[in-house]
Image (cartoon, rainbow, N blue to C red; front, side, top):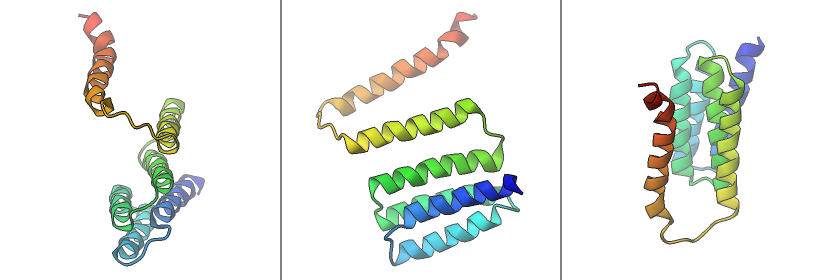
Length: 137
């Protein structure tokens, strides 16, 4: 019972955070997302559909950054619980990325050259992740 109840509760939290103060088309999309969350209790692929509908709700509703952050964290945990058994590293990184996004939202930094450094940082992270695989050859 708990195996099904917790993901559905997180799905409702995800939709609620995205649809907070929404109107018009965003409410319609959020209603369909709620139906997909309910359907995901019996059919797992509906969970992915629910998350995609929540993304559409965020776009149509022009949700606040912190509500979007809560919806994103709930969506990540919701998908993990619907499709696999959660592990400590998975949940740690989901919460860690959410906290990093919250810091970015709360402390906006206006550095004009920062977008130019992002690809280099991603390349460095990619090479760092591949390092153990390349060392074994």
